Amino acid sequence: MESKDMIYFKRKIYDTMLRWKTERNGDTALLIQGARRIGKSTIAEEFARNEYKSYILIDFSKVAPEVNELFNDISDLNYLFIRLQFIYQVELHERESVIIFDEVQLQPLARQAIKHLVKDHRYDYIETGSLISVRSKSRDIIIPSEETKVNMYPMDYEEFRWALGDTTTIPLLRMAFEKKMPLGDAVHRKLMRDFRLYMLVGGMPQAVSAYIRTNNFSAVDLAKRDIIALYEEDFGKIDDSGRAKAMYDAIPAQLSKNASRYQIGNALPNEKVERVINIIKDMEDSMTTNIAFHSDDPNAGLALTRNEEYFKMYASDTGLFVTLAFMDSDITENVIYDKLLNDKLSTNLGYVYENVIAQMLKATGKNLFYHTIPYAEGKKYYEVDFVITDKHKISPIEVKSSGYKSHKSLDEFCTKFSDRIMNKYLIYTKDYKRENGVDYIPVYMTMFL
Image (cartoon, rainbow, N blue to C red):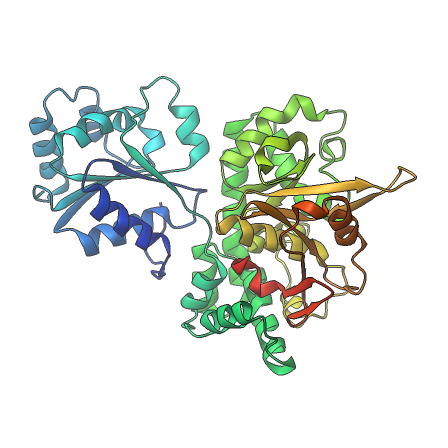
């Protein structure tokens, strides 16, 4: 449940919810799935307030025992509705009210009741939950088929700009991308500075809220540390051996090594990847991480060639990633943020860009894949950071934070799979250009791929 003093932010999922309301007209419940603290409860309540005559929000993380007990026996729905109206002091109106089951994974019987509640058709139902808990807590119930599921992610770059009161930047970027035109040095410099701010703050509503309220990166960092602590606690529920937490904490170190895959042995000494595959799957389901799997034979059906033992793990939010990377100091000193913002930090930050690109691709609904090609002598690899499906073909993406003039991995990939290539992309920190059949995309345009 999000805190009440938070600023309300405009989110794209609102339009998805509107479509569900008009098109399904009560024939299904809406289940909003996502990691904790991304704004699920906030958007559900905002939607209920704006789009219905009245609503009841049942927050199962702090509900009275008498409410929980109502779901033990739902044979008399009239009784259920009368009791809920009395307890919450809200009058429900037929076809004009919605009941929200917030953190529904904490009361599996309420989720099981959805089948009968939807069939009754008097009211609409919105459920929110984090996927991992929804799964683990649903093992003993009949999962309702009467659910429309939508995934919710941290705020994307456009939502972040909206939060700062900027509605003009993204339409300009979209037009420049579609017309394949550079924006010019001065504009590009400003756009990169704006984008680095997004990389630092991230898309978690509490962190964005802290930034807007205080304009102070220490306050932002504290908000992010609270969220990381919460996620680490959740990992303990997935896996009480501590392996999930250790793998999450190791994400920045793993990416900075620039290895061709996540090296389990470094994060978990003496552990082998085949023994933790289920934990990795749970971490992916929790939506706290984005996982790119190796595609062994990249083609339009990428999912068919994914190798579950070769993967890279990213933090689902790059703001959290930056805080994770500097967790060793008590509070990330403002100087780190300041230097990052002004592009003055000496550390090779290529891996931060890689993380944000993974996040942006995921936010547009893409699954993440990458591909490696061994050198002729066999010891090293050419690596294409991301491969996306593009119509009936594929488009490789190489990420460069510097030294973009050589892109041997992209070239090798395009030679090897020449008949499958739609577009060739190099995502970097300079202005847009097209050269020798390669589209050089500034990182802030990733969302249009």
